[in-house]
Length: 431
Image (cartoon, rainbow, N blue to C red; front, top):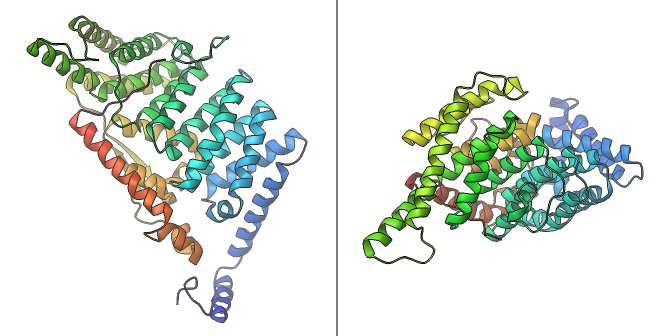
């Protein structure tokens, strides 16, 4: 008999009692965890900043260790708005923790109206928080949060473009509306580039204009010369993604067509501009080749030296021969495979954001299963212990979640097809 599908209250009570006796302490532990989450949420109303910080840290731990669907179903709006309040007036640490909770909340709810609500409710407060201080911890956490909530909740190109512009203008204000008065730290530059590239992986059929292509490649190329190794690695991954889009080949095809027809198509690339672009690519190839063989000493984070060498060896092979690296990540008893730069960049970013919660989420988070087309052999947690209400919410083919999931899967398939065809392109409007 299925406990949750039974309409017989007496049977349910009896089965529940039997289950508790067969699993002594399990229900009590869950009740304790739920109580701790409730107490942590209540503590966000406290005046003392250190109390709120401790509560937010507890919520992060809870969302990392398990998918808190039942808690979110009851307390979604309260948790979101209290976290946003914390980003407005809290310390850098409090803002950082609150931003992380908001990102975890988006990954937990997955596709649908709630993810869209998180994005729309958060963009303005997070943008304002970026302008209110320059502490690296605060800035990087907000940028990563903005990237994650846009990745989950952004349903149209305009929303993604808006977030990408907010992120990019932190280090390259001439492409944004606000002038950054202070020089960004290496940590901020790294986070900006990786967050921007993470969102670039989601964009379909934008037109990356020739002028912007040159500006972005020129800037990322300049970052390959920086002392900080993490900056160089982030710039290398972003360049791989830009070149994987096939945009340069598209420009070349348009220029050839214009030359053959004897007419210049509006927005197409001149021969001079095309020569300059190929020159930029050649420069990047030489830079990447040098970094793939770096002997060490340049940059303080020596532990990243092998990471850099491997990344740039892969990038040299890609730029010269067109082969993207294949990766395999162990998740429990399964392996998550990637075979394109955009998949690898998505995986690396989410793995970094989730930290200790990565394995748990990859095993049980259906949104991440959809992102990576990953199906674990055994999925514990939600699937086997869902209430009838949760089953209707998550499993019904007519549910809003499943409709959003279908749209997302269709988009993923289209992105993969375009990438394989070499026509995956992206645009950010020039200011």
